[in-house]
Length: 412
Image 1 (spheres, one colour):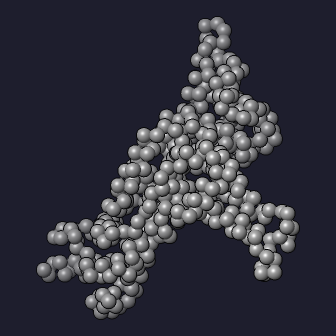
Image 2 (cartoon, helix red, strand yellow):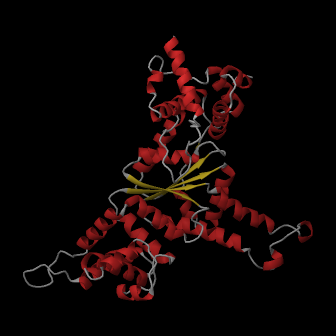
């Protein structure tokens, strides 16, 4: 018993250093989340898994959940579950400009340069680069390979001239040693000056949206792995379009500021135009064979708004929408498991796992009553739970009061 009490004191001393076990809890698309999915959500994850695995055609899976419920956290669980897919996270706020270029960059980062080189090599082989041009030695007919590549892909692309240029860079990357580095830089999305573009016989670099879309489509459709695009907080875009639609019916007399003062009654506000363009670009991504898109929203109403907009432009695309899945708040069991799992990671980080030797379910410095009270207060919302835990541990870290006295307020 004395040994255990000493361990408790030691843990409190570690906490006093200022290392909050919940301060670094991650819920972004850029930094990997390692805690895994809550037990109550495993069935939903399995449903998503089956939808993606069993459908060869393109599809859109709507995920609906209130603020802080863990929609971004779900991304990492999907990524871990579907490890043989290229799963890319985007926030519309971050890819608002240069949409296709940013999407391409995210997929390229996920794939890696080695995979890019391997894919361009396989494409050139498919287009006949192994055939001998003449004589005994292997000399590829570059122009013939380009022609074969164009003939094999031309039916799937509207802009034939851009397709020819993109294929030209892919072939140059593999078969022209004197221009290989320039071609690779172009494929990696680097900015190119006129001189380098001329050497590659292309008009633009990948900042130009049609070039980025064309290359993105080629790479995804010829990848050995599947591809998933996870679009978080899709409601922002719909909210912007909806707000301007409603604004068009408002009286100028009732509005302190109206965008029509700048644009006139017959003009559509710039923000609405941009929002509609982004929505159209996401819809265009469905032209990429095999791409699965997951969108997250806060309500069914927003999903209905999306479908109504798409119905007006291209009603056949509605067939790509799966039934929405609802992310519920944590159950009481989830919060206890989350707390124990995170504390175990913390103890492992400070090399103090032996604290749990006698009782792996030990909740110290909190206890069952405090955690239940947190659950009740937050109604199981994961983000609010984390905020409460951070608050409590900050008090433990920065206060000199006795731990029992310190936590009295969290029992009520």
